Length: 116
Image (tube, rainbow, N blue to C red; front, side, top):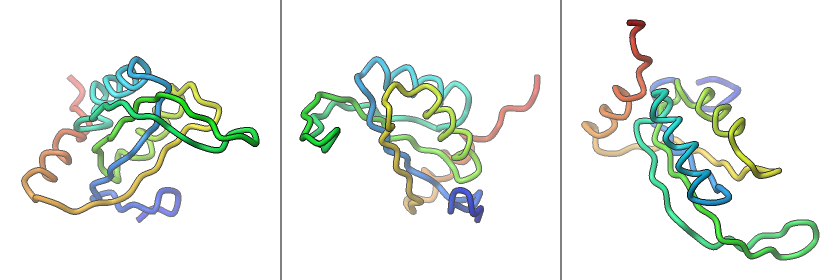
């Protein structure tokens, strides 16, 4: 387990990210998958209610649910934050358990490709 992330390299990690809109979510998500920083991402629309600058804000947003590994999480997190448009990106992550073959697929999909 690394102190910086709290995840072991072998952990399967779900990352939830609130984005400004579907275009931003799709751009970030596609880039994560293309770089093997995520096995897959789910994109959905939602309405957000939250405190911002001393008032309650109500905004349509999109979200990403990112499936990655503990080993790839630091790079995935940094990639998400670098491409995110919000002043305070909403990003949370947690380790999960589940169906072993599916978790194995996530691990294999996030493996760094061999130089070719």
